[in-house]
Amino acid sequence: MATAPKLSVGPILYYWDREKIFDFYQMLADAPVDIVYLGETVCAKRSLIRLEEWFEIADTLAAAGKEVVLSTMALLEADSELKRLRRICENDRYLVEANDMGAINLLQGKPFVSGHSVNLYNERTLALLAKKGMKRWVLPVELSHETLADLQAHRPENVETEVFAYGRLPLAYSARCFTARAHNLPKDDCQYRCLDYPDGLTLSAQDNTRFLALNGIQTQSAQTFNLLAELARIRELKVDVIRLSPQANWMENIIKLFSKTLAGELSPDEGADKLLRWMPVGSCDGYWYGDAGMLDHARREIAG
Image (tube, rainbow, N blue to C red; front, side, top):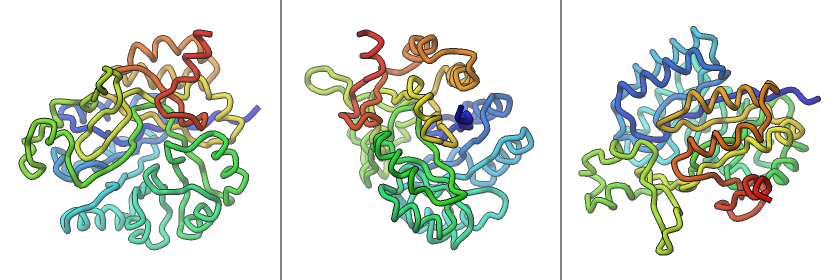
């Protein structure tokens, strides 16, 4: 039987207040997770936690036995953001998750994780980034398990694979702030409205279908991507790490549920209904099957 993958928690994609952030990472210090990603990846204006404080959080988690990775932003727009990126890439204490090619170039051959926002779609890119020092890569969220199988067959030696397995899908980034626009505010005077939406601002289509979630300059799926039902296939594909993306509530319960399922103490079917109750809107897994992202094959199979 294939070895169970490690469990990671990705960076917080939302704008939470300081107390909530510190409480969240205190919880993770004792939680059954192996890897924790830290840092701001969406908007540089979300600066309630200074870079020095992120390092302090990293030190606390490392002391608790966690592998800590510092994540970089996916879209940089100012010199100040580039300076912060350089400081992260130049650190010699923690591995860096590079979320764009600029970060990969700044790392200059140091070991790094290639984040989901890097367009890693084929074996040639896998080989190229491995030569640049890539230690682990995260499957882009829009790719299917069939594509993953093809890439795994050509994966370079000593490179790990990580799959985004739970959370609202990060779909796109823009220079425009959609949350500010929803409140008729300019981006430069957004009044930090993202603080009002700890899981993003859910957007409905004209037929009232929950369609997307607005998270500042990031567009997400309204539904929560969930691969709990696919853990057996994930093992068969020799995935090394599965990632849970933080949400505002129930995260400790979600981590424990995935951990117990990976350990064989709980079946995916037993955990499915609980997970659904903890999601902001509902679940999806369409991309994993090479289908429309909003579809939910697992729930459809259970209902059938």
